[in-house]
Amino acid sequence: MTTKQKKVKPLKAKPKKLWLTILFTIVSIFYVMPVFMVVLNSFKKNTFVKTDTFALPNAESYAGVDNFVKGMTFGGYPFWQSVLYSLVITLLSTFLIIFFTSMAAWFISRVNSVLCKVVYYGCVFSMVIPFQMVMFTLSKTADTLKLNTPWTIPIIYLGFGAGLAVFMFTGFVKSIPLEIEEAAAIDGCGPFRTYFKVVLPMLKPTIISVAILEIMWVWNDYLLPYLVLDRTKYMTIPIHIQYLKGSYGTVDLGATMALILLSIIPVIVFYLTCQKHIIKGVAAGAVKG
Amino acid sequence: MKKKKKKAYSGAAVNSKLLRRPIRRQGWFFLLPMVAAFCIGFVWPFLHGMFLSFCKFKTTSNWQWVGFSNYVKAFADESFRYSFGFTALFAVVSVILINVLAFVVAYALTQGIKGTNIFRTVFFMPNLIGGIVLGYIWSMIFDGILGAYGTSILLNKTWGFWGLIILMCWQQVGYMMIIYVAGLQAVPEDMIEAAKIDGANAFQTLFKITIPNVMPSITICTFLSLTNGFKLFDQNLALTGGLPYIINPDGSTVHTTEMLALNIYNTFYGQASTSRGVAQAKAVMFFILVACIGLVQLKSTRNKEVQQ
Image (cartoon, rainbow over the protein chains, first blue to last red):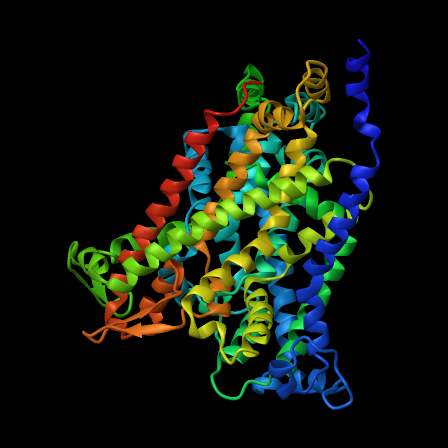
C-alpha cells in the first residue's frame, strides 16, 4: 500500500526538472544562434562576413548602418517597395481567402448537394497537390487573365489556397447547431443576414486559425509570385532576397544580411504579439487529413 | 469524432425548407466566387497540365500530341532518377530525425518544467521565417564553418545533404513539437496514474500508455514531415541550388543535391525550352507520388490508433 502511494507522488520531484531547465536553456541558446548571427553579420563589412562569420564586429569590421543604407537600393530595386508589395499581397490574399471560403464552406455544408460535394472533395484533393504540378500552366493562365500584378494575384492565391481553408471552415460549420440558424430564419432573416449576423461571428476562432496559416504561407511564398508576377515591375521580399543572392557576381553579403534582418523583424514582432493564436492555429491546421 | 459530426449535420433539420432552399438560391453569391477562383487557380491549370504532359510544347498554345514519350524520356533522364533517390533518402532521414527530436522536446516540455513557454516560443520561431531566407541564413553559417577549412557547402554533396537535414530539423522540430504537445496533453491523466499504481516504470508508461495515445499526432506529424520532405523547394534552392554538379561522359549533368521539385523546376525553366513536355510529365509523376504517400501513410498509421 505504501509503495502505491509513493508512486503517485513523483509529480513534485524537482531536481529532475531543474536539470531539464538547464539543458533546455542551453539548447535554446543554440537554437536562436542563427538569427543572432544574422544580426551580428548585418553590421559587418562585406569581406568580413565570410572570413569572420562568428566573430563579433570589431573596429576594423564594423560597418555601422552602411549595410542597411546600401541594402535599400541594392540590386537596382528599392527594398521598401518589395516590403510594400509583400504586405499588399499577403493582406489582400488572406482577406479574400477568409471572406470567400468561409461563405463557400457554409453553403457547402448547409446545401450539401452533389455539386457541393464535388467542390468539397475537389478542395480536399487540391491540398495534396504539389505546386510544381500546376506551376507552368498556372503562370500562363495568370498571364492570359492579367492576374500578374500584386493587386490581382490574390485571386490566384484564393484559387490555389482554397483547399485547406474550405476544409477547415467546413469542419467547423458542421459543428454549429442548426437550431441557431433556424431561429434566425424564423425571426425573418434571409440567407445574407443569417450568414453575416449569425454565422460569421461564430466562425471567429477558425477565422483566426486560417488567417494565421494563410499569412504564414503567402508572406513566405517564393515560387508562386516569382512565376506569376511581372518580375521587372514587382518583387516580394523572398523574390528580392533570392534575386540578390542568385545574381552571380559580387554579392554584398553584409548588405544581404541587413536585408534578411529587416525582413525577419516584422515576422518576429508578429510572432511575439500573436503567439498564442499562431500556436493554436498551427495545431488546428495540422488536424487536417 | 467524424461520425459524430456527420450525424449532426445529416439530421432532418438540414432538409428543412426553411434553411436549405433560400440559401441555395443565393449560390451565385456564396459559392460562385470561390469556385471561379478555384477553377482559375487550380482546376484548369491542373487539367491543362495533365493534358500537356502528353504533348511536346514550348508555349501552351503551340502543342503537339506525343503520347507517352514524355514519360519515357523522364524515366530515361538520369538527373531525374538521381534526384528521386536523393529526395527519398532525404525524406526518410528527415522524417525520423524531426519526429524523434520533436517528440522528445514535446515530452520534456509537458513535464511542467520552468520556462516551458519560453522554450516553446524559441523552438517554434524558425517556422515563421520563409524558406528562401532560412536557406541563406544557413548558407552563411555553413560557409562560415567550412570556410575555415577552405571549402564550401556547394563543393561537397555530403555536406549539402546534411546541411539540408540540419536546416529542416531546425525549422520543423518546433512545428511538430506543437502538434505533439497538443497530443500529449490529451493523454488521460488517470490512465498514466493507473499504470503507475500497477507498477509500470517510466519506460513502460511511455511505450504502453503515452505513445499509443498520441498515435493520431504521430500519424499527422509523420505525414506532414514526409510530404514536406518530398515537396521541399525553397530551402533546396537557397542553400545549395543543387550544387555541386557532375558531368557525365555523355555530356549530361547531374546536380548532386537537387531534389525532385527543383529538378522539375530546372527542367521547365533552366535548360532548352524543348524539354517542357518532359518537365510536365515529371511533375505529374511527382504529384502522383506525393498524393500516394499521403494516402498510404494515413491508412497504415490510422490502424494503430487507439480506439476511442
